[in-house]
Image 1: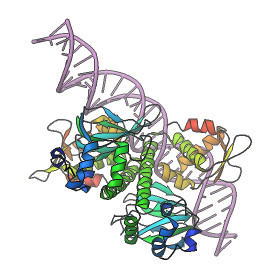
Image 2: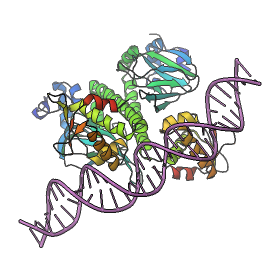
Image 3: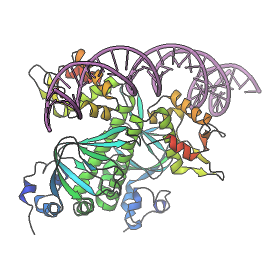
Image 4: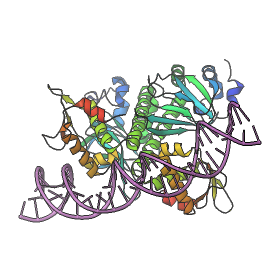
Length: 233
Length: 233
DNA sequence: CGGAACGTTGAGCATAATCAACGACTGTGG
DNA sequence: CCACAGTCGTTGATTATGCTCAACGTTCCG
């Protein structure tokens, strides 16, 4: 039996993606159906309502999952980062539109072939189940955020979430974070308008909680504790 | 090998619950770990944040899944009806509070034992995966509803959803529906207040779209098409 | 230089929340 | 049998939150 190709063994997300559930020896078949591709920033890889042909692992970059009304109102219903899985096995139609936020490297599989792989690798199917359940909890948690928190709380909560995942701590207790979303995308994520997001950011700045020394997308959180306090929940 | 007990073969949700993925011959082990219990209306069966010990199939009745803020703001993040599955395998903590909306008959399993059963029955695990993905789509769809629709649209959409699932059509094209939620629960479901829900219901009534001849919880939809039009999306 | 994308800020407004009162219905206990 | 409290739903008056519309600054890139 052929062994796994080096490009899979060396993959940046070998231990973070669904592939983590597959042993090196068994990686062969998966590797034959998957192919890597860099998708430029701002490009959609699946469209809500269209035929569901694609599954993929995010290797680098980030994507937003969006739902939209007929008249164009948009809601970001999920964010994907390296190691995350894109797509919905066993569905004929795509439920969401997936768009890259940066140039993103995806390891793409034809949906049908990927479904077969799931059947061949129970450990991978189990991991997908656990991740799907985790995504469901996230989605429900965001229903509470969107439905019941004030604009101020939503923004504070968003910053706190980012801080929890990838903040870099300074000596003085402040934390530096990179904001993966533009103000517009933050608005679509938090179900607000751009203007409201902007106003709440300046409000937090004026309150001395955060600072923007290095540009709009780089944020220094001066008082992580107090910020978390604003986020309630 | 022992065969499945008659109470399982005769079960109301034999073909609708996760058990539908298990053949009669294999139902034995599942039947030994499950026990039926009627939970009175308004009682919680899992609490968000508490130890996650329970999984169950809904046999009769209905439940709401809720998330709440520290200060008591509530959001209904899901509704469960006969055949639906309650619980989250592989998690130590419950993410949501599940509360009965009516006296409800549940077929309950200890979580750990149920997880073992999932491993023993790949077809059931597959069905759970598909249902979890379906729930995720529902949750994301509701994020759009809650985040981007007006009060009027949310209420119209809610009624349309119910109509689609279990409306009884009359000769004249109107459709009768039973509302499973009180105005208060509708408010928590749609991220509105009771007053706003009430006002929107009367607005729809005054617009000649719906009628309440048989009480507040029974609704006659006079113009399903036009109602759907109000729901946009 | 001009234009596009992004972000901020201000003024005014609209939608839904809040606060309050009231009616209908149900079950309980005197 | 009635009084009573409790739950549920409706309606009105007022307010506040966040949206809309508009202007303007900055950065980046052709």
